[in-house]
Image 1 (cartoon, one colour):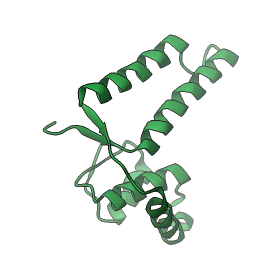
Image 2 (cartoon, one colour; image 1 turned 90 degrees about the horizontal axis):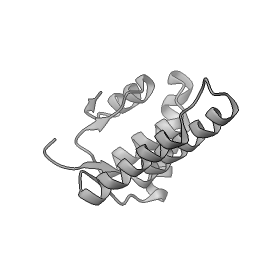
Image 3 (cartoon, one colour; image 1 turned 120 degrees about the vertical axis):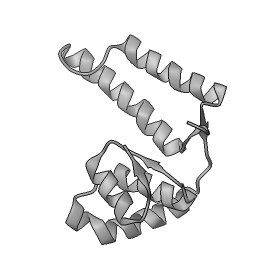
Length: 121
């Protein structure tokens, strides 16, 4: 990668929250979720990547993102079944005018492509 990976606070929050939720799941059923130590390692790696500049947090207006997300929802959700966070991530990319959008989520990919974003898996 030629430049750092750009992250929004929204993405950082969702990543951290999902790891904490997976620890909670593991505590209730050892066959599910992730170990606390694995979650802590992943969170520490994210912080190390941010500290080293491999990844950077980019500011993004929440107000603009929410307005764009509402528009996307109106135009796409009843046809594509999009979830709130998927829409918010695409809206953030549109507000930031990104060159490439990274996702492994098929619905999010479809929404991003429908909005003209160049999507990488």
